[in-house]
Length: 355
Image (tube, rainbow, N blue to C red; front, side, top):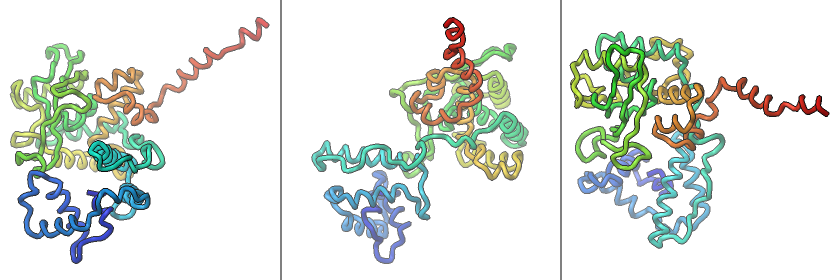
């Protein structure tokens, strides 16, 4: 959509750019709804079709530069996040590869490299990480909520202790949790993650539901991974299961009336918890602003605790390369130990004395 509007260079007479973007994203690019577009949308899309240049435009270096400039700029004129720019360029490169395979283009007109601007495209902002005291305060406030406290406390504890993505956590069933006996309160358990249910919008699922069930990122269809379950999380899950008398096939985290836990619900509760428990200047900062920051905090904690990166990547469902790209600059607390290792390896004092 961004590329299409960039190549247009102008808007239909009397039609705002917002209406053009809506017509493209919700109707033209949605095969489930395209044929049922209302008349006003059809008129806008007809104008877009007539004024969209052919693929020959990619032979014009100036046009390519204009598109890349738009990809790196937000609607208000500010610079887009490096990760967003990289993602948009990756999609555009896939389009170019498709055009080359079908003989529409001879070569890829896009410059090589990420071209995402300064900094690391996917690197997490260290300011978003929660310290243990902040995490404890947030989880305790949520647990004491009179309405859905145990349910939401267990959900956020799952993200904090396992580093799962929210869409993976909401897909978990009771039977996916291998918990030790209740008497073994200090033992670890294991969670089997085998699906994700991200929110994609009713107009995109084709089923009328907001969520879409998918496999795990970076796994073959039907693939799964095991994640260790911290004793503190086990206690939270047991409280949740016993309070609701949940069965193996039930969702671990459901909505208030059953069904899947909606993102709008847990995001609203998380924001309220931050506003209540954090100091005003911390609430206004990036610290824990998104629920996804619980995953960032968990993975950073694992790395700083000396867990081998390959193991962290396996538990988190990502690659070692991506792990380093995102979290390498968040690793801390090991400098002194590493300095001692280097000092011992480079110690020449005994050789000087021998000479």
